[in-house]
Image (cartoon, one colour):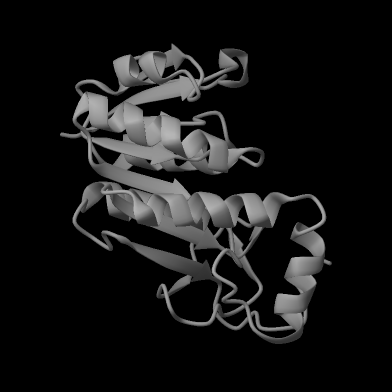
Amino acid sequence: MSKVIILGAAGHIARLAAKQLIKETDDQLKLFVRHPKKLTDVDKNRETVVVGDVNNESELAAALKGQDLVYANLGPDDTDKMIPHIVNAMHEAGLKRLIWISTLGVFDEVPGKFGDWNKQMLNPSGYLPTQSKAASEIEASDLDYTIIRPNWLTNKDEVDYEVTGRHDEMKGTEVSRKSVADYVVKLVQNPKKDVRTSIGLNKPNTDGDKPSFY
């Protein structure tokens, strides 16, 4: 049994991953959130809700103590500013393993017309530059991290994905949130898997100039 703390636990992917962990493991989950009212389906036997802000290092470090693994599903804003606080709090709590949800394009790894379209969609909001800086800060840390770069997300009820490596070009144009959650669960179940690297996730055979739903 592992003790897993989920930062940003009210997010869609985070809830999917939590439900799968409850179903497939005996892990105990700590749900770290700013707005607990967003959590409407908590398993009171296996999930503990903690209200806090990741930018408050002492608050976060207290929540991290006694945990085995940190899964962060934060965003979309100011994630680069959150990273130093998370790293410091993990150091204080004696934790090394971090699973971090990022986005495609943070390493300029999306080729062709789809890559151009992705930049046009994500750059104006500042989302892509912020995520890129956060990913770089994580790579510069001494944590045992895995940075996950999902393709454009769908709510399809399917687990269908393939992975690409840190220095590979991104494939496809989309992936389901349920697929991302499944990969997170695999990392939690095998904490030594894909350590200190970044993994891209896409649904096979979805190549194109943009996702099919645009």
